[in-house]
Image (cartoon, rainbow, N blue to C red; front, side, top):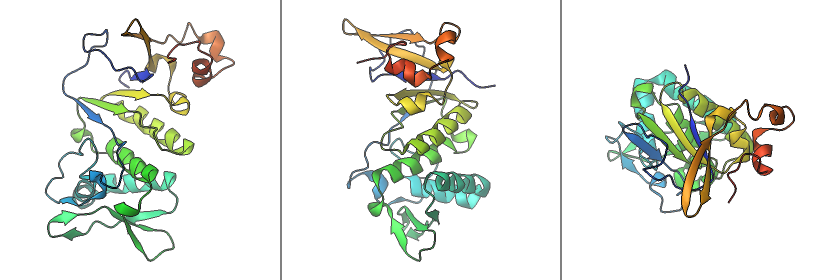
Length: 233
């Protein structure tokens, strides 16, 4: 059984007193900061590997724990990353003075690359795949994702959309997005449209029956673009 997704269109920030009831223990992940000083690009303590941090700062220790203790899960992450990044071979997770730097190898290449050399979109894709394919027992009660599409190739967005649908069978997922390709990965009943009027945000879940005639000719993203479902600035 898949739990109902809360997919928020537009960037309005939900008011805690709004009509959406937030279950206990939400955990927000945002991988927007991939600057040269971002924590994901630096070394991190090997011991800090229980949960993936909100900015994926400890992704290397986290992946090493999965590789050593849950190899099937680890290799599923690697295989999914290869779908998005065909040149990717595997991670190189070497411990140096009890710290680990995110490194990897590429296909048909004998060089080892590290996080300081990664493109922003590559780091975000690796972080999202790792987050969404982590063991079920590590998942929070509510998983909050803010604009996961940022910096991703359209094909990568489709892969991430599929992973979000899959993980929603295990925990509540709330996604804020402004991505047309991403909402096309979901059903109308998954979508909550956020509109702002008189300095307040209002929330409305889409009704598939109401949109039935429209959906015979148009996708959800096209209806969004045409302002049929709202969610415009």
